[in-house]
Amino acid sequence: MSRHGSSTTHPLSAGVVIVRFQNDTPYYLLLRVFKYWDFPKGLVENGERPLEAAVREVEEETTLTDLNFHWGYDFRETWPYGKYSKIARYYLAESPEGEVDLPVNPEIGRPEHHDYRWLTFSEARNRVCDRVKPILDWAHDYIQNGS
Image (cartoon, rainbow, N blue to C red; front, side, top):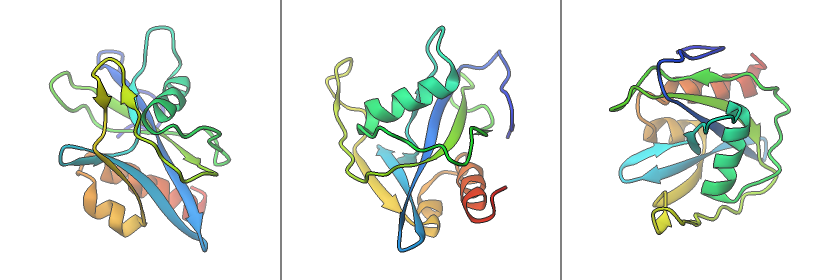
């Protein structure tokens, strides 16, 4: 897992670990496609910066806007995965709103995801795959300890 940059030989996906607080407890937004739970993310388009892609993907996949990046713009990346050895880069942000919509993607004629959940750290950790666990761990540690 990289902290500051991916190899240019791998396609780059960008997303956001989104958190909301209820009674000082952080809840993380996970999206489900088939049996896989992950954070909102998608491919970085030509000429687009990864952070711009991450924010765009969050809005396209969840309709959430006005993300607060008050922890800064640090990020973590997964190791290469999938058929094309894609790398996923994740930023960390808080959402002031919790109403999520899973809109229809006009390219595929249906929502990209089947379900969403706001989950505590332990609930989220039990659902995400091994590739995403270090990302969730980083985000939770950052929220709890600022590092």
